[in-house]
Length: 374
Image 1 (tube, rainbow, N blue to C red):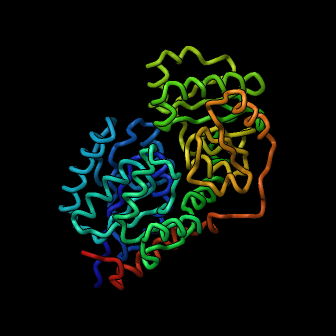
Image 2 (cartoon, rainbow, N blue to C red):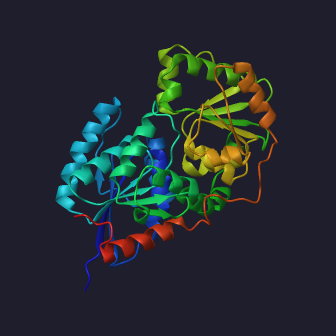
């Protein structure tokens, strides 16, 4: 009897749980794969972690590293040390990583140094801004990976420009589109958050802020609050607060500067978050994942950054970038985007079968020993 292929999946942050959920479901083939899930603990708040595993039906992690917060160096070093030990113990055929977090970087480094092939889901994304920690993580992870699962044709072209062999690059589509199709209808059936919060559909603004470039830069964070206060004069704003954002607001004394039109919330579970996204008049965010989810649910989006790794959404007219050096201009961009639609009949992220393609390719690559350097 053929032994099941052992795969170690490394996750640690809210967006990765969503991506891993659909791939883990596709990996459930008795006797074919044995998936061992490792949760680094990069996101450790219950509303950013435990509730996601429960709502998405992800199996409990075999390992929970409990790394928690810290500087990039401290956090990554703790992960690297712990991941190395468990990889030596488990001796998998492949390590599966997602996205662009410090968990992604640590997993790629630990596996590559042990000569265990790395498969990177969401490979090839670039904002072209190396001041972003996530950009460094993406680049390093991609160049350490043996199999690169690209979500878009643009990502494929980027990887080829960087000299990565085309035989290692696989265009599969975006697993977040899989998740949107899988969990969107479930949210409709299960979530009562719109009623609980007494929100009027299409008559509120949803905002999320968590990127270090915004939370760690006092001038940018002040500009964001100024923009939201002005937008809230026209439509109520709901702002689920990431722990990093709440801490930053308190640190610079801005937690009391939020106007009456802005409603601060604790982080929402995934199904509730889908509901508030689908029913918003507009979404304001600095999250890559939320930009895409806005598009999946056909809600206009404004991104609180100078660039985006999902440039196709800007090109299609569903996303606009806000220049926070110009508060009045940012407010105008947001208000003008309400009710605005982009190109409707284009789907750059595949057909919602990315997870199945990933699992099929993993089966083929492992059985043929292609890309396996161990």
